[in-house]
Length: 318
Image (cartoon, rainbow, N blue to C red):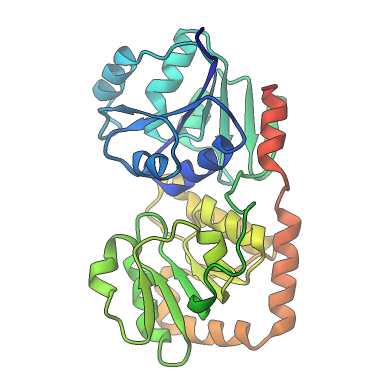
Protein backbone atom coordinates (compact mmCIF):
# COMPACT_ATOMS: atom_id res chain seq x y z
CA UNK A 1 0.00 0.00 0.00
CA UNK A 2 1.33 3.45 -0.93
CA UNK A 3 1.01 5.90 1.96
CA UNK A 4 -0.23 9.43 1.10
CA UNK A 5 2.53 12.00 1.42
CA UNK A 6 2.74 15.74 2.11
CA UNK A 7 5.56 17.49 0.24
CA UNK A 8 7.27 20.50 1.83
CA UNK A 9 9.46 22.81 -0.23
CA UNK A 10 11.31 26.09 0.12
CA UNK A 11 14.95 26.86 0.57
CA UNK A 12 18.25 28.69 0.67
CA UNK A 13 17.59 30.71 3.85
CA UNK A 14 16.41 29.81 7.33
CA UNK A 15 13.34 32.01 6.86
CA UNK A 16 12.10 29.64 4.17
CA UNK A 17 13.17 26.43 5.89
CA UNK A 18 12.46 26.73 9.63
CA UNK A 19 8.65 27.20 9.35
CA UNK A 20 8.44 23.99 7.30
CA UNK A 21 10.56 22.10 9.83
CA UNK A 22 8.20 23.28 12.57
CA UNK A 23 5.20 22.20 10.51
CA UNK A 24 6.74 18.78 9.83
CA UNK A 25 6.74 18.05 13.58
CA UNK A 26 2.93 18.09 13.48
CA UNK A 27 2.57 15.95 10.34
CA UNK A 28 3.18 12.31 9.49
CA UNK A 29 4.51 11.01 6.17
CA UNK A 30 6.19 14.17 4.94
CA UNK A 31 8.97 14.63 2.41
CA UNK A 32 11.05 17.79 2.03
CA UNK A 33 12.10 18.59 -1.55
CA UNK A 34 15.01 21.00 -1.92
CA UNK A 35 18.45 21.42 -3.45
CA UNK A 36 21.36 19.03 -2.96
CA UNK A 37 24.17 20.17 -0.62
CA UNK A 38 22.00 22.97 0.77
CA UNK A 39 21.01 24.38 4.12
CA UNK A 40 17.62 22.71 3.83
CA UNK A 41 19.28 19.31 3.29
CA UNK A 42 21.53 19.75 6.34
CA UNK A 43 18.64 20.84 8.55
CA UNK A 44 16.43 17.97 7.36
CA UNK A 45 19.19 15.53 8.28
CA UNK A 46 19.44 17.18 11.70
CA UNK A 47 15.68 16.89 12.26
CA UNK A 48 15.41 13.41 10.69
CA UNK A 49 13.06 14.46 7.88
CA UNK A 50 13.06 12.49 4.63
CA UNK A 51 14.75 14.66 1.98
CA UNK A 52 14.53 14.53 -1.81
CA UNK A 53 17.38 16.48 -3.41
CA UNK A 54 17.41 18.27 -6.75
CA UNK A 55 20.48 19.39 -8.74
CA UNK A 56 19.45 23.04 -8.56
CA UNK A 57 22.18 25.60 -7.89
CA UNK A 58 20.51 28.84 -8.93
CA UNK A 59 17.32 30.36 -10.31
CA UNK A 60 18.18 29.95 -13.99
CA UNK A 61 15.12 28.87 -15.97
CA UNK A 62 16.82 25.93 -17.80
CA UNK A 63 17.89 24.40 -14.49
CA UNK A 64 14.41 24.82 -13.01
CA UNK A 65 12.77 23.19 -16.04
CA UNK A 66 15.27 20.32 -15.96
CA UNK A 67 14.52 19.64 -12.28
CA UNK A 68 10.77 19.81 -12.96
CA UNK A 69 11.06 17.20 -15.71
CA UNK A 70 13.11 14.87 -13.50
CA UNK A 71 10.82 15.03 -10.47
CA UNK A 72 9.02 11.79 -9.59
CA UNK A 73 6.85 12.05 -6.48
CA UNK A 74 4.36 9.28 -5.70
CA UNK A 75 0.96 9.61 -4.05
CA UNK A 76 1.36 13.25 -3.03
CA UNK A 77 -1.82 14.70 -1.52
CA UNK A 78 -0.61 18.29 -1.03
CA UNK A 79 2.40 20.55 -1.54
CA UNK A 80 3.20 23.23 1.03
CA UNK A 81 5.72 25.87 -0.03
CA UNK A 82 7.40 28.86 1.61
CA UNK A 83 8.81 30.13 -1.69
CA UNK A 84 12.28 30.73 -3.04
CA UNK A 85 13.52 29.46 -6.41
CA UNK A 86 14.03 25.97 -4.92
CA UNK A 87 10.26 25.56 -4.73
CA UNK A 88 9.64 26.59 -8.35
CA UNK A 89 10.03 23.15 -10.01
CA UNK A 90 8.04 21.48 -7.22
CA UNK A 91 5.13 23.88 -7.59
CA UNK A 92 5.19 23.44 -11.37
CA UNK A 93 5.04 19.69 -10.76
CA UNK A 94 2.02 20.17 -8.50
CA UNK A 95 0.15 22.22 -11.10
CA UNK A 96 0.99 19.79 -13.92
CA UNK A 97 -0.15 16.78 -11.86
CA UNK A 98 -3.15 18.58 -10.33
CA UNK A 99 -1.85 18.29 -6.79
CA UNK A 100 -3.28 20.92 -4.40
CA UNK A 101 -0.66 23.53 -3.52
CA UNK A 102 -0.59 25.75 -0.46
CA UNK A 103 1.71 28.72 0.04
CA UNK A 104 3.11 30.15 3.26
CA UNK A 105 4.39 33.74 3.19
CA UNK A 106 6.77 34.69 6.00
CA UNK A 107 7.24 38.39 5.25
CA UNK A 108 5.04 41.49 5.20
CA UNK A 109 4.91 41.36 1.38
CA UNK A 110 4.45 38.42 -0.97
CA UNK A 111 7.70 37.06 -2.37
CA UNK A 112 8.14 36.67 -6.12
CA UNK A 113 7.51 32.91 -6.15
CA UNK A 114 4.44 33.15 -3.91
CA UNK A 115 3.07 36.05 -5.92
CA UNK A 116 3.45 34.08 -9.16
CA UNK A 117 1.95 30.83 -7.85
CA UNK A 118 -0.71 32.50 -5.70
CA UNK A 119 -3.21 32.29 -8.55
CA UNK A 120 -2.84 28.48 -8.60
CA UNK A 121 -2.82 27.90 -4.83
CA UNK A 122 -5.86 26.66 -2.95
CA UNK A 123 -4.93 28.88 0.02
CA UNK A 124 -2.16 31.30 0.95
CA UNK A 125 -1.16 31.39 4.61
CA UNK A 126 0.13 34.75 5.85
CA UNK A 127 2.29 35.61 8.83
CA UNK A 128 1.03 39.21 8.82
CA UNK A 129 -2.06 40.79 7.17
CA UNK A 130 -1.52 42.29 3.72
CA UNK A 131 -3.12 45.48 2.44
CA UNK A 132 -4.84 43.58 -0.37
CA UNK A 133 -6.45 40.60 1.38
CA UNK A 134 -7.87 38.12 -1.13
CA UNK A 135 -10.49 35.49 -0.35
CA UNK A 136 -7.97 32.61 -0.28
CA UNK A 137 -5.64 34.41 2.17
CA UNK A 138 -5.55 33.28 5.81
CA UNK A 139 -3.54 34.98 8.59
CA UNK A 140 -2.17 32.00 10.51
CA UNK A 141 1.09 33.36 11.88
CA UNK A 142 4.38 31.56 11.30
CA UNK A 143 5.18 28.03 12.51
CA UNK A 144 8.21 28.10 14.80
CA UNK A 145 10.19 25.62 16.86
CA UNK A 146 9.48 27.47 20.12
CA UNK A 147 6.97 24.95 21.45
CA UNK A 148 9.53 22.93 23.45
CA UNK A 149 11.53 25.67 25.13
CA UNK A 150 14.15 24.77 27.70
CA UNK A 151 14.82 27.46 30.29
CA UNK A 152 17.72 25.44 31.75
CA UNK A 153 19.55 24.32 28.61
CA UNK A 154 21.78 27.38 28.12
CA UNK A 155 21.98 28.89 31.61
CA UNK A 156 25.77 28.98 31.48
CA UNK A 157 25.63 31.09 28.26
CA UNK A 158 23.57 33.92 29.79
CA UNK A 159 24.62 37.35 28.44
CA UNK A 160 23.46 40.96 28.21
CA UNK A 161 23.34 41.02 24.41
CA UNK A 162 22.85 38.32 21.78
CA UNK A 163 23.81 39.27 18.21
CA UNK A 164 22.32 37.11 15.43
CA UNK A 165 23.56 37.47 11.88
CA UNK A 166 20.94 35.24 10.27
CA UNK A 167 21.37 31.85 8.59
CA UNK A 168 23.87 33.30 6.09
CA UNK A 169 25.81 35.37 8.62
CA UNK A 170 26.38 39.15 8.68
CA UNK A 171 29.78 40.81 8.91
CA UNK A 172 28.39 44.24 9.96
CA UNK A 173 26.55 42.60 12.87
CA UNK A 174 29.62 40.58 13.79
CA UNK A 175 31.56 43.85 14.00
CA UNK A 176 29.07 45.10 16.59
CA UNK A 177 30.47 42.59 19.06
CA UNK A 178 33.76 44.51 18.99
CA UNK A 179 31.95 47.75 19.82
CA UNK A 180 29.92 46.35 22.70
CA UNK A 181 32.10 43.72 24.38
CA UNK A 182 33.95 46.21 26.61
CA UNK A 183 30.82 47.30 28.46
CA UNK A 184 28.48 44.28 28.14
CA UNK A 185 28.63 40.51 28.06
CA UNK A 186 27.99 39.49 24.45
CA UNK A 187 27.13 36.31 22.56
CA UNK A 188 27.56 36.27 18.78
CA UNK A 189 26.14 33.81 16.26
CA UNK A 190 28.56 34.45 13.42
CA UNK A 191 27.48 31.88 10.81
CA UNK A 192 29.94 31.73 7.91
CA UNK A 193 32.14 34.33 9.62
CA UNK A 194 32.81 32.09 12.62
CA UNK A 195 36.48 31.45 11.83
CA UNK A 196 37.16 35.18 11.46
CA UNK A 197 35.51 36.12 14.76
CA UNK A 198 35.88 33.04 16.94
CA UNK A 199 38.73 34.50 19.03
CA UNK A 200 37.06 37.81 19.93
CA UNK A 201 37.92 38.77 23.49
CA UNK A 202 35.06 38.68 26.02
CA UNK A 203 32.61 37.39 23.38
CA UNK A 204 31.04 33.93 23.22
CA UNK A 205 31.11 33.14 19.51
CA UNK A 206 29.09 30.37 17.81
CA UNK A 207 28.75 29.36 14.19
CA UNK A 208 25.18 28.06 14.60
CA UNK A 209 22.74 27.26 17.40
CA UNK A 210 20.27 24.46 16.66
CA UNK A 211 17.89 25.38 19.50
CA UNK A 212 17.93 29.14 18.97
CA UNK A 213 14.68 29.94 20.85
CA UNK A 214 15.98 28.31 24.05
CA UNK A 215 19.31 30.07 23.58
CA UNK A 216 17.55 33.44 23.19
CA UNK A 217 15.91 33.03 26.59
CA UNK A 218 19.29 33.61 28.25
CA UNK A 219 19.83 37.18 27.04
CA UNK A 220 18.46 40.59 27.99
CA UNK A 221 18.57 42.17 24.52
CA UNK A 222 18.80 40.78 20.97
CA UNK A 223 20.32 42.47 17.92
CA UNK A 224 19.27 40.75 14.71
CA UNK A 225 18.64 41.01 11.02
CA UNK A 226 14.98 41.22 9.95
CA UNK A 227 14.66 37.68 8.65
CA UNK A 228 11.13 36.36 9.01
CA UNK A 229 11.83 33.19 10.98
CA UNK A 230 14.28 34.68 13.50
CA UNK A 231 12.18 37.76 14.22
CA UNK A 232 9.05 35.69 14.72
CA UNK A 233 10.93 33.46 17.16
CA UNK A 234 12.07 36.57 19.05
CA UNK A 235 8.51 37.87 19.22
CA UNK A 236 7.16 34.44 20.22
CA UNK A 237 9.31 34.24 23.34
CA UNK A 238 9.16 38.01 23.99
CA UNK A 239 12.58 39.67 23.96
CA UNK A 240 13.47 43.35 23.49
CA UNK A 241 15.33 43.71 20.21
CA UNK A 242 17.13 45.99 17.82
CA UNK A 243 16.52 45.08 14.19
CA UNK A 244 19.14 45.92 11.56
CA UNK A 245 17.70 44.89 8.18
CA UNK A 246 19.86 43.70 5.34
CA UNK A 247 19.37 45.88 2.28
CA UNK A 248 20.52 43.09 -0.03
CA UNK A 249 17.30 41.09 -0.10
CA UNK A 250 14.67 40.33 -2.71
CA UNK A 251 12.14 43.20 -2.99
CA UNK A 252 13.92 44.82 -0.01
CA UNK A 253 11.69 42.64 2.19
CA UNK A 254 13.90 42.80 5.28
CA UNK A 255 13.67 46.58 5.44
CA UNK A 256 9.90 46.45 4.89
CA UNK A 257 9.66 43.81 7.65
CA UNK A 258 11.63 46.02 10.04
CA UNK A 259 9.56 49.13 9.29
CA UNK A 260 6.37 47.18 9.98
CA UNK A 261 7.76 45.70 13.22
CA UNK A 262 8.79 49.12 14.51
CA UNK A 263 5.40 50.62 13.60
CA UNK A 264 3.81 47.84 15.66
CA UNK A 265 6.06 48.72 18.62
CA UNK A 266 7.90 45.38 18.53
CA UNK A 267 11.48 46.58 18.00
CA UNK A 268 13.86 49.46 17.49
CA UNK A 269 14.91 49.79 13.83
CA UNK A 270 18.48 50.82 13.06
CA UNK A 271 19.85 51.18 9.55
CA UNK A 272 23.22 49.60 8.86
CA UNK A 273 24.76 52.97 7.96
CA UNK A 274 23.89 54.33 11.43
CA UNK A 275 25.35 51.48 13.49
CA UNK A 276 28.72 53.08 14.25
CA UNK A 277 27.17 56.27 15.60
CA UNK A 278 23.94 55.04 17.21
CA UNK A 279 24.27 51.47 18.45
CA UNK A 280 25.92 52.24 21.81
CA UNK A 281 23.35 54.86 22.81
CA UNK A 282 20.37 52.75 21.67
CA UNK A 283 21.63 49.68 23.58
CA UNK A 284 22.17 51.73 26.73
CA UNK A 285 18.74 53.36 26.41
CA UNK A 286 16.95 50.02 26.13
CA UNK A 287 18.88 48.13 28.79
CA UNK A 288 18.30 50.92 31.30
CA UNK A 289 14.61 51.46 30.57
CA UNK A 290 12.64 48.51 31.95
CA UNK A 291 9.29 50.11 31.08
CA UNK A 292 10.25 50.56 27.42
CA UNK A 293 11.49 46.97 27.23
CA UNK A 294 8.28 45.64 28.76
CA UNK A 295 6.13 47.62 26.33
CA UNK A 296 8.12 46.20 23.43
CA UNK A 297 7.54 42.65 24.68
CA UNK A 298 3.82 43.32 25.13
CA UNK A 299 3.53 44.52 21.52
CA UNK A 300 5.42 41.45 20.32
CA UNK A 301 2.97 39.11 22.02
CA UNK A 302 0.05 40.98 20.43
CA UNK A 303 1.56 40.44 16.97
CA UNK A 304 2.15 36.70 17.32
CA UNK A 305 -0.57 34.22 16.33
CA UNK A 306 -0.59 31.16 18.58
CA UNK A 307 -0.89 27.57 17.36
CA UNK A 308 0.11 28.44 13.77
CA UNK A 309 0.83 24.82 12.84
CA UNK A 310 -2.57 23.65 14.00
CA UNK A 311 -4.32 26.48 12.15
CA UNK A 312 -2.57 25.62 8.87
CA UNK A 313 -3.25 21.89 9.23
CA UNK A 314 -6.92 22.61 9.95
CA UNK A 315 -7.20 24.89 6.89
CA UNK A 316 -5.67 22.22 4.66
CA UNK A 317 -7.85 19.49 6.17
CA UNK A 318 -5.14 16.93 6.88
